[in-house]
Image (cartoon, rainbow, N blue to C red):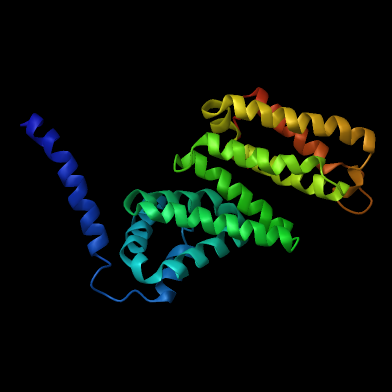
Length: 245
């Protein structure tokens, strides 16, 4: 009996997933319903149920509303700052059913990141870098790929003007608490190169005395980048065990 039940488990799981998607097929899901589901994710305690329902709704409506879905998700990523990991999880869950969706989302994130950098919208850029890096935690994007992505950003540290290097340093440092643990375990060699690049930058930076570019506000002499780098080094020593990001 138990052996037969064990053999049936994959079929039961497949039927359950089909039932979840079927709940949204055959009826018109309008934009306002999608918007409500996407933006409200995580607002109540039953997070697993919310993720399951949102995934089913997105899979069922992807053919007709993919552009709207991606547009809404990325607006949330850059505005609902505490929900980064929820949206990376949603992207990965939908991608597990619709394999092209994750690629489309990553392409959109890269395109938006380029636009925010060109427009000097650095808060949005930092949130997009954080989101892209957090995809490594979902295992949708390999850690090695994320490490190389951060290395590419870190190459800008040496390019003039000074403000450019400072800003790209901020983008990289702000993302590391979200992905440092997975990168150090999945891509140790590339991660080591990345950390060495940052360390070399801070050696040069102290000589240049440009801490004024990122400070904590008027009348405060705290060098935010220096503080962030110290925190990242501390996290690295504790194997990136971070209780809050």
